[in-house]
Length: 360
Ligand SMILES: Nc1ncnc2c1ncn2[C@@H]1O[C@H](COP(=O)(O)OP(=O)(O)OP(=O)(O)O)[C@@H](O)[C@H]1O
Ligand SMILES: [Mg+2]
Image 1 (cartoon, protein in one colour):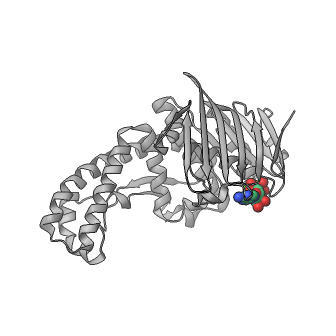
Image 2 (image 1 turned 60 degrees about the horizontal axis):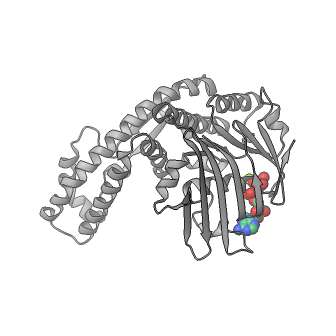
Image 3 (image 1 turned 45 degrees about the horizontal axis):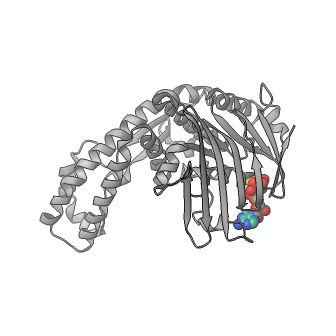
């Protein structure tokens, strides 16, 4: 799966750009502020309906325009697919896939699985558990279709439960919700657990290449004491839940633990090593998707050379090339990428003040 055409209009500083990306490595280069990250952000926006940089989607619309338009042709095994997205300053979003209006943004994500690695997203993975949970759920969502409904249901019931807790409802009226909550939680947890197990298999090899002398362990924690029965725990923790006004333990507290020896990874690794660990996680995730449902992800790697020495740039680019996926990488200096590749990039784009040109 790859993008064979990408049109961007009124997105950040890009007024109008038409790109014809190639399969393999696409290198985007240009000076600070030229619009490199904006191109990756536009691809992400098209696949996810939101930005990876700002939670305020209005900010990505060019300041002089009242709407942005993105359009792409996606080459799939079953033929070409056309995706269009329009976002208005009023907040409205219009999405079309092959001419048909799409209501659920998750349909976009299914069509266009994206792996993004940016200097910001990699530090995110070492902050709160939320982004690590999102990482697991991205994989769970793509690998087992029933995950989406199970998780939506668990969240819906959790919200009801929390509302009752805040109202100080007696346990007898919460008990009914707990039956459902436990059922959905089991489904969600099983899928997440299975997913992390499969991911670990692939991850070992990649981490072994990137960080051969470091003993990294990745494990799943489900969000409550692993020895406890969840239904019993909910009953036992009722008073505490009422006191805090929300459900203290559960699938909404699940996490991915990244450890080096006995230490959390962020305390044990250097910045470059952390970046490589995040790259390994993302690459493993893309590879697993290919194995499980025969679908390629698209990789967006912003400022690939930063924090990495020449040897690790080479290793990273080799791993990305080996995925067989379409990859977009940005750099200020194109030599930092070209010199680390065994073959020239499939295509190079130069960006200057929001204008994009192909470099022959
Ligand atoms: N909504 C907007 N409308 C117009 N311009 C914008 C908007 N949002 C951001 N910009 C501008 O877009 C330009 C491109 O930003 P971008 O982050 O893509 O640059 P970059 O090439 O990735 O730079 P760097 O090498 O510093 O990472 C910046 O100068 C920024 O000020
Ligand atoms: Mg940038």
